[in-house]
Image (cartoon, rainbow, N blue to C red):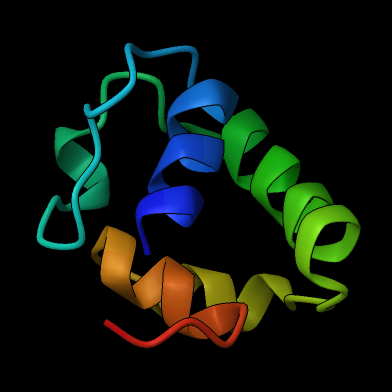
Length: 73
């Protein structure tokens, strides 16, 4: 999970340690529709997982995003 959060922090251009599993996506200053698309690309590149936009829209927390790529807390 720590590595996943580090990847996410880089994606949203925030300092390391910004995101935690409990962080809601609304709390992430860099999270927007463009970042969501970047997350989909990161999921494919880093984890080999294709995340659909429909599934991504249901995500509310960083832990939800991690679950989409197969990482459990």
